[in-house]
Length: 129
Image (cartoon, rainbow, N blue to C red):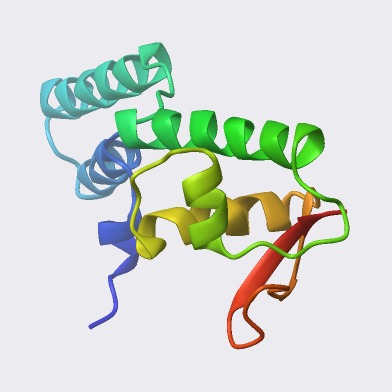
């Protein structure tokens, strides 16, 4: 089920919309002022919020940095390594489901290249570009 336009709005936008509707139906000015004030408070609250990263995202970025350093400093630039080989080389204790997004992120950033693993032709491998 698709969301309505009103459901997609942030709280401050909803208050502005309600104030507009109230003014169209000629509601008492004090009611309109109240709704406008609450909308401004919501907007001010949102403006003061700092965008923060989750603990998991910070951990992932730190791991990606370690992986990148390993590829630059220790890995053979001609070899495609499986996620398991990278995991073992860095002594991480991650499942493939946790390792793959870290490697994929480095591929998307243009740091690593994805190909067929050198050690196991049936698996995906990664190497430095």
